[in-house]
Length: 312
Image 1 (spheres, rainbow, N blue to C red):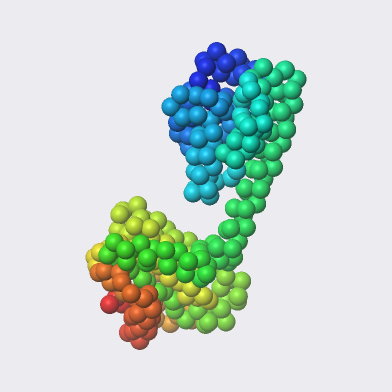
Image 2 (image 1 turned 30 degrees about the vertical axis):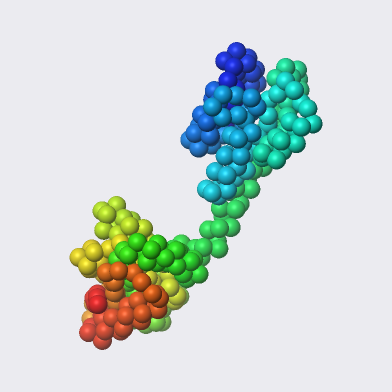
């Protein structure tokens, strides 16, 4: 385990640290509660061993701050064991209320210390497995099973948050709606398995376009989502008119440039996209007009011959 050992006494920290290292644990030392909070944030230990009485910030206050940090950042719970020379009932109650889980004496016998650490190691292992399972469940709940992009439900949730932030600061906002041209004909000609492969390939392309837009500073927090069927969306917060047009053009060009054969797309012979987009210089009010405007431009792109982006 990675153990954060917090004690203002160098002698105590040295002795306990050496004992823990001897039985196979990695030890990080902090000299007071304030330093412990900072090192917890950086190191993400599996366990904290925390002295109570320390200068600058005592162990109880440090435990409260660490629990608040875990809650704010949606981190997994980390066991906190207080080190004490006085295991009074009052200290025990205060420790539990502060977010601690157990007490051990600083003079704990070697066999007891080793047994405690074995128990904590089992807990750390179970916590890691639970964290992995929770991440997998979150991914299943938030991502489209076919393409791996955000699904419609999660897109809506993220969009609401980003729109609220943009409204609060009066930032610009862009929305692109994309539809695969003649996709039903593609499925009829190549089969549904090939159709699924095609959608996965397009999803990877759109995700890459968003990643490049973020990296180039064209849009802060840009992401792509599967809107439904063969329809996708791209969300572009804090985007300029020029950047919005560049991202839209890049998406259309990248899909055509992938040269995925489409014998039934008579005009182009490869898979193409139609894109409709809109941008507001200042986010305010409802998102509904933004979607209506983007949809209208999408229909216009199709009417004008497909494989193109129309922005309003």
